Image (cartoon, rainbow, N blue to C red; front, side, top):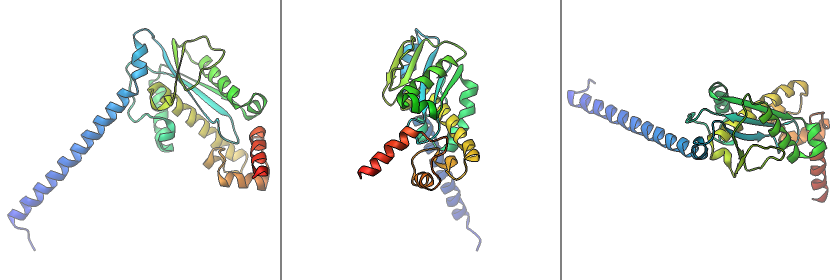
Amino acid sequence: MALTAEEKEQRAKAREAKAREREARQQEKERLETERLEAMRVYEREYEATCDYICGIDEAGRGPLAGPVVAAAVILPAGLTIPLVNDSKKLTERRRELLYPEIMEKAVAVGVGIVCEKRIDQINILQATYEAMRQAIENLAVRPDVLLNDAVRIPGVEIPQVPIVKGDAKSISIACASIIAKVTRDRMMSEYEKQYPGYGFASHKGYGSASHMEAIRSLGPCPLHRRTFLKNIRRQEETE
C-alpha cells in the first residue's frame, strides 16, 4: 500500500531527527574525548615551559611467569594529543596495534629496553624493570630534560624524575610508553609461541592463566619461564 504524502513527511522528519540525535551523540563523544586528552596533558603542560624533551616511561611484563620485561620511553612533540590513547590495559589489542605506528611516527623519540627472563631470575623483577627502563632511556635519540614515570623512581638515572601513581592513565607520554612496551612484548610472546608450541604464549602472553598453568604441569617449564616465579607458585600450592 502506497504511503500518503503526510506519512512520507512524517518518516522523513523521523529520519532527520535520528540523524540529529546521532550527530549530537558523536559531538558529545568527541567533546568528552577532547577533555580526557587535555586532562592527560596536565603534567606535560606543567613542564613544557622549562623543558624541551618530556619523556614518559612505562613497562610491560612484570607479572608474567614467562618471557622478558619490556620498558619504553616516549618523547612527544609539545602540545601533541593522539586520539584514543590511554593506559594500554584499558585498550583492546587491536586498538593498541592501531595506535602503535601512529605513536612511532609522531613521537620525537622512542626508546625500548628488554630484560630477559634469565636476568630477571638473577636480579629479581623490580631490579630487572629498572634495568629495562634505563635501557629505554639510553636508546632514545635525544636526552630527556625530565622523566614522567609510572609510579616508580628509577635508580641510577641523573635526569630529574616525576613518579606519578597510575601515570599511564594520567599522562599522555606515559600512556604512549605503556602502549609501545605492551605491543612490543606481546609481539615477542606471539613469536615465542612458534618456538615453544603448546604453552599458549600467543594468547596469554606468559601470564598465569589456567591454561598456562596446566601446560606447565603437562610439559614442564621451557627456557622462557622465570624459575623464581615458578618456585613461588610451588610454595603457595604446597601451603594450600
